Amino acid sequence: SQTIHQWPATLVQPVGSPLSLECTVEGTSNPNLYWYRQAAGRGLQLLFYSVGIGQISSEVPQNLSASRPQDRQFILSSKKLLLSDSGFYLCAWSALGPHLLFGPGTRLTVL
Amino acid sequence: SQQGEEDPQALSIQEGENATMNCSYKTSINNLQWYRQNSGRGLVHLILIRSNEREKHSGRLRVTLDTSKKSSSLLITASRAADTASYFCATDDTGGFKTIFGAGTRLFVKA
Image (cartoon, rainbow over the protein chains, first blue to last red):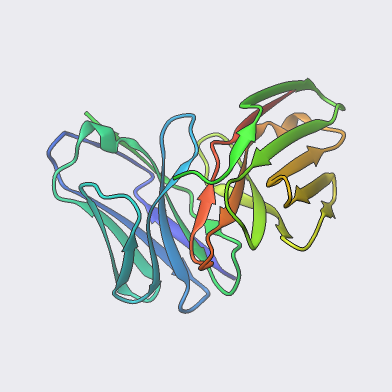
């Protein structure tokens, strides 16, 4: 069966520290992969998406970056976190259609 | 940028009542989806309606789509306390790779 993993589940980081969030998908190949961010009580903001290894499309210019080193691995990074980077980060994937399957999310608090 | 906007932002009803949530969007779409999010969790896909469809049912869910008004509605019949969650509409872009979410409606069903 197809599953999606995200880690860590929660993270508290100081301002200016680096960030690395990882997402992996099992049970499928060549998925489209997505990173969304959700501020408290708000909707989802699309950050990055990827349709293949090494291919990244950025939706919102900011101090975050994404990489896809393997077919089913998607990584969200930052060199220096800002307070405004706090939020709930969700990884999602889709195969042949528009239906997205979401991971459990990572709650990031930047202090 | 957000494509879909849900209305109302929050809805509180008694168990057994019907809940109706509306979504408006701005540009032409290929399909529209509805997702559900329990507090602190990832989103779960509920139903997809294509641009050439006007109504779709799935269990206690009924979705309508009016492309002339660029709007959709989600009806949950005979609501239960377990339906308490946030509900989001989502639309695709013309390329079909990006799914853009609205701000969501928070539904609270009182037992």
